[in-house]
Image (tube, rainbow, N blue to C red; front, side):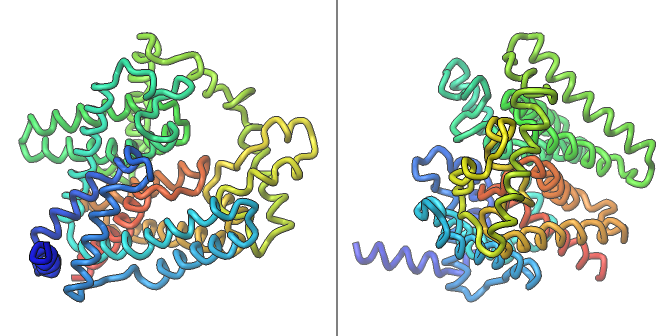
Length: 415
């Protein structure tokens, strides 16, 4: 037994670069599959811990640049301090504990090992392969009722929005990979990724996640603009927008008239009343701002804001639509106080500003997969204006890879 343990430590400490990258891309492949494990943790975290151990042993660590790191630390500090104010501290402490893993282990591993365009390309292939796994899982349990919740597809996830958020980036990346393999005259592989992109779109439609519809539409439009290489023409942009929206409408219509979409799907698209109404979005934001005006420094704590809703509501309309606000820029101020709110605003503004300045300089021209990762991150942030602040590992994987991609393309343009 002792000899086995010694071999294990020597294996981990060995400078085996090929093994390290196998583990890295395997971790990207496994990133959506955490939900299968009852503890909401699994092989993704395990592989990242192995990787960080290897990097520490070899004294090879690269951290995010200080503006990004400062933003992440503000988010961590805000949510950590706000646990002191939480009615349910055991629930509130989940955020700082999980976010500590994200900003230390996950960020460090990605920044240290992802250094070239080829590294990003292999991340994209791994994520697309993971979507193939999700599609196989769906096919195996197609007739099962446990993969749905309130007629919305969830597979093995807790809720349909979480499920759709894991499918969206892989769908967008598969669309680009289909084009890229077609460009390389590898028709069969191109068809495979095209089918994966179409089926990923089907899964998102079946999830009925409106925010991920936005994610997908924006991502497809910008990816098609990247593929065409014509980013400066308004006419081309409009054409690509119409094509992207048309693809989603055609797939959705076929599903609807084929009887695969329930009545709740149409109900969720109704903005005049019910779950799809504007009041259902606006009222929670009003309640959140009311709470923040009285608790600026320290928030309610992660997942604790809903415990204050009864005291905050003043009218029948507010009582009807009282729930957690779906806006990733607002909920951190409410749950994590002023520090977390500023941290999120800072991180989002840094990503958007760097994206715009890189695009304006022309560095994204012919950048391929680099620009697609940035597209995924920007699409996610825009869609999350209608969603909550996320702890999902895959979302942070995409954000970190987008920031790394911007660094890579800018360094390349300076060489």
